[in-house]
Length: 172
Image (cartoon, rainbow, N blue to C red; front, top):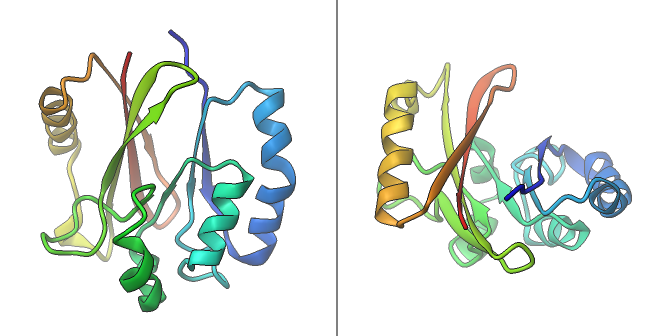
């Protein structure tokens, strides 16, 4: 089974958000996009995310929003929203007890599959958070076994200044 997944890199500020709102709905139709992930950690004024900006991304057609270290720039969002919204992810490899979740299993009924999105972060200034590729593979395989997912697909993304990894697992 083929699933079309669209990854949108860093959506920055109001201009980036307006572009997503303007273009994403038609883009999804034109290219038969089944599932969309966007990095939203800089969508609120270029740093952080708010409930309003998150809802605008969801309304435009984003299914899951990933974040990184800038998610903490709007602390009210973290306290009021991140812990209650399952489709907004903070990096999984943050210390235990950190607000939010680092993964979600998303039911995609239109394709009769479940898609697990795992958000991992590492980088130059986050040496304790770096996940080596062997560790990443081990974590994804463990995740696949624990959730009895039949297949595993992974895409690694590397922005300029830090590693932001998003793993996609599919069951179907």
